[in-house]
Length: 337
Ligand code: ATP
Ligand code: LTN
Image (cartoon, rainbow, N blue to C red):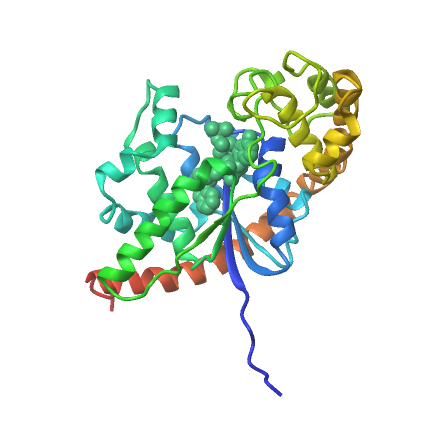
């Protein structure tokens, strides 16, 4: 009998603790994590170090970092199986990021569209951390030798940079890092603002009606969906160019029910917007209600959460240290005696 343990491929992903989580995060990230978690060895982190690239209120960041972990569990991440941790608990992230900074071209970092967008949004605080944000993200991924990184579509360019850095380092020295693939769902990868459907639904949007939060009460969810901006006409056909508003509602319905765009169109086209909005509101509330309840339950048990975070950080550090040690050796750092 072959008793050799077949090791699973590795996943790493994370979300910034810069605001409360929305259904966009669920669609672009957590939903897929839950689907993949049994087939991979998974590391899910809270990117608190990334969060301070924009100004944070310290008490809010502290609370939210734990909220995000509780939300991972509430969305169905199996905490006995996957490793959940907070990025700043594992100092190797900052250490590897420094080394990778020295292998990243200035022009390469300057081309990142998220950097361009965020430096416009936060023109009063365009800091060097924001510039090297994707390099820290590459460190997050490469430390764990991740094979797959499930993220929303907006992160594709960062994964591409991560792949380039891994290949560059492997080529300059010797194979050190796994070269990761992105995992981006085809439908629902980009949930748009309910008020401006050509813009991504973003937790930092000052208009609260544009976002459905994973802690929103049923009545709030239904109200926000009823008030969502739709397009002129009455067709319920998926077309993000011509009908961004209705296409976004179709994406939400897809996320909540699993139905394809074609099935949704067959079911609702020709019946007008009102019954469709009603159905979307019901389905989304039905999706979020159990998540919200589990979140409250998990959050009310702080001792269990901190034990989970401690064991998560311990496990993550063991893996991260192995990779960092190799990197330090290869670049020529003297091993401490
Ligand atoms: P911000 O909204 O504050 O600019 P963000 O929410 O986009 O930031 P993160 O919190 O780091 O940034 O996002 C975490 C993950 O959730 C990423 O994989 C991202 O692609 C995904 N995500 C976030 N918002 C959406 C959305 N509206 N649609 C699909 N995926 C999303
Ligand atoms: N930048 C990411 C969040 C993030 C991340 C990661 C995602 C930080 N580190 C590592 C995947 C893997 C974002 O989604 N905005």
